[in-house]
Amino acid sequence: MGLLRGSTRLVGYIKLFILARLLLPEQFGIFGIASLVLAFLEIITETGINVFLIQENTDIKEYLNTAWVVSIFRGVFISLVLFFLSPFIAGFFNNPDAIFVLRLMAAVPLLRGFINPAIVKYQKELLFKKEFIYRISVYTIDAIVAVILAFITKSAASFVYGMIAGVIFEVIFTHLAVRVKINFEFISHKVKRVVNRGKWVMGSTLFNYLFEQGDDIVVGRVLNSTALGFYQMAYKITTLPISEVASVVTTVTFPVYVKISGDFKRLLKAYFKTLAAVSLLVIPFGLILLLFAEPLVRIFLGENWLSIIPVVRVMSFFGAVRAIAVSVHPLFLAIKKQQYVTYITLFSILGLGITIVPFVLKYGIVGAAYSATIGLLVSIPVTLFYLIKTIKNKG
Image (cartoon, rainbow, N blue to C red; front, side, top):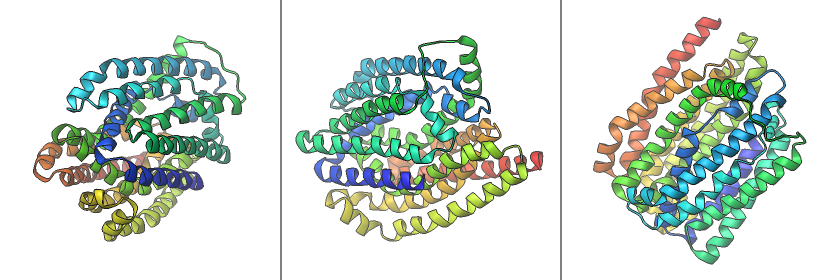
């Protein structure tokens, strides 16, 4: 999984650095608007099926047909909403050029709905080599198509065409590679059980979206799409390399924690070892980004992006602290305490929500970075409270 994340990020950064030389910050901002809206629609319709399937200790085959049908209907719904509301969304962000990209983006959730849910077996059964082949292929196809079309069109739509190509491959791969037959079958009581368990996952994911993207929405609305392009680029080159450590940890530790959750002492020991490893990885990386922000931006992005240097410095601290803080989330999920993750993220949103508008109005995109950091720091005492509570109750 470390190799997977490292490889996909390498592909992603090569793509990003090439597109940064081909496209303008405003075009990054237009794509940013479309991706913000798609992510929001996917989150408010989240069913938590994947988490449910990993948590289940019994055979998951009986749930796959229902999961696939729910996924298809969800994709159709998101696609229709995104397509028909695109003029209103573009109006909200004061950018009519975003309408075409938004409507093109509507194809992505429609296609995603047909992905075979049995692909979750790769994570559930710890088949991370197969997961590597699957994911790196999707990322590579996405990057190649996006870069080629950016050369040809010089348009923000090239991002979306890359995503569409990646999703088409994903649909084909999941049905051919995972030899589990699925049918179009809807069983209401199974849906109810999944949704009842998944409501906390949806809540946590929604709150996490509001925390991660709330600053983007305010920047795009209060400032403009060019400022959004600058801010999102700064976020990507600082927090994503660090957060990839957290993503690897979450992906690997969650199914492992589930398997050892019956022995809490062993589970807790595994968590603290993981916490130490994450800290040793992300703190040096955060320091490098903090100290060498200017040369890194000049070398990899070029002169058009120099205004993001102060944001990079703030976000390097944010990314390192967040990677360490979220390493506890798989522990809570493994013991089926999804609500803890939801409450923690809610406090992050409160810290962000109180400060984001005045900070952006006064300090611009740097203010947005300060606000995100405040939101994160507010949530840390809550995280410690639930961790101590868990240790006391299980110990």
